[in-house]
Length: 204
Image (cartoon, rainbow, N blue to C red; front, side, top):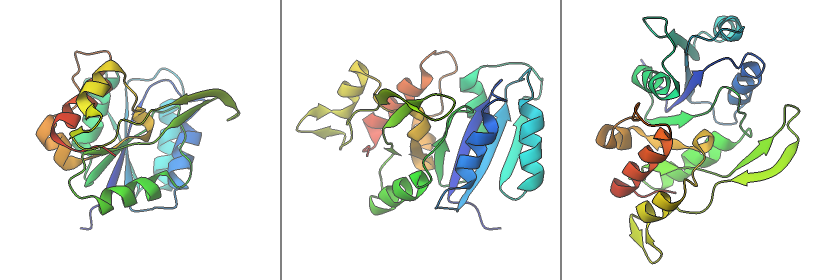
């Protein structure tokens, strides 16, 4: 069995208004060696029905799960379950109300492949309204580099500011194996994970 290079992990919760556009933006990527792993966190809207429609259309690409106890567990545990179900060498994250530019995977996977040993790659993100009009807010600042460089450690800079947008982040499985998954006790578990990765791996 050929395993996908990338697993796109989505924690879904009450984003029925947006999830179709999220999935469509992934499926339209110029880089196609991926699977989509969605875990729904007991949505009370029509999210599950919409996801199941996509699964029926793309059964070889999309895999859908729910928590075994059918209870709401929050984004960290839901994302961790998606990671546990994933099979790719790289793990990409996107929210169930986010969209990607169509070349995000192509650009970021190329960067990872050029630099073996990198733990995380990311890009800037733009806040948009429901019609995709820019709200003028850009998230993500340059903290990339080796673990220690002329500007100080990446970890030190990340502690001061979470400048890595989760929806643009791709993490190597090797980094997760070494550093662990999202800490389900924390509100900002992505920030915590980026810091842990930055202690062990270069970031681009």
